[in-house]
Image 1 (tube, rainbow, N blue to C red):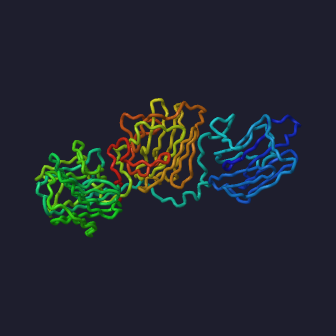
Image 2 (cartoon, rainbow, N blue to C red):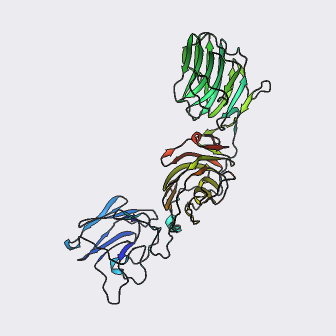
Length: 547
């Protein structure tokens, strides 16, 4: 048998006056903090006690293991005591009628001599397993004065020490301001994200130099490309990040065959820090500099003709990538300080006819994590199936008391959500009965989770039970006490950070979108990048602003 700290007793039906109790029984009690196990197999009673106390307000697991006549008590995976039954007590039989009681026994049942304490338990019980069978509290035969489905708030004395390191703050901690990087361009937050800069066709013909700075956490992305395709002749210049390396390519393909030049930097440049790239071609030599250090020198064509336009960040959807190039990815990060042949290319420039699509501003200082400004949401999947099991993990940072973290709901009424409600994290599930059940993690200081610091959420849903943990605080639980479920969530959009106006609210307490940053979303052991999600609305990818 295994469970958490509890009192458990097996007894028969109420006794008639003068009738003796049957000889077989077992019980687990808490006596002044010690675990007290009592058994009787028909010949004599036995008692096992723990030397340590467990009335500290924390969850503890214990195992009572009986192998033939040997009985062992384990607490928190450590063997703490044991005994050996008499030869005639090898089998402890349960009664044909009666029941398995938790937390206490009903009136009219005489169990005083069978238990260490006849006082009802004040605390929580969960995860009961008897002979490898899970005992579910969702469909009890009878209960009284018990909160089925959640662990009641512990008294202040039990909470002491749990939040001793909590900051004493009396309000949320919003950032003073989000400083924007002057003249920097942010690419990758929209489906199409690029800048087209008109160029003189002689710019890259012979000798040239081009420099810029970039910042990204992603390993792949296009910095720039210029290409001239005429019949069977193709000439291309490009610079991109591939697997964390800067790769500069000069390609000339004609009837005589291909002439390809590549200069490749060392890896590890996608650190989220600004890095400077300079590309210099002098006659038949191409030089690549990273942070003012020469990292590669290769042979190059003497002349190039790459057309009249240079694209930054990515290519428009209606332009086909030359066959001579590998598929490129959109840059998801920032560019600044573009210089070509000694000229500053400020973007936009009224003297040129720059074409800008899906490009925004860069925050001066960022860290990994996508930013939700309050009008944003992501659709993880438009056809998500929760099934009978869901495990999720994510991190959030906010300066608001309320906000949607995630939600999935279908028209049949089944739904699941995680949200901030007045400073507490709330996990809620409705199996289509109209009677949702939830697990809540809230601290005495309601501003603890809106302190503009990262917090980790771990949640799980298994059939009719849920669990929720935030950081290292006490885990919370919820159970479907209605005794009825109509089904599981199937084929519904899975929203992160907010909802569109047309989406179902489901179990959410409000429709207030999240404001802050979210990162490292893992569902059922699958980590999905923001770029792989079904749709993004105003989400700033991997650009979580910091002071």
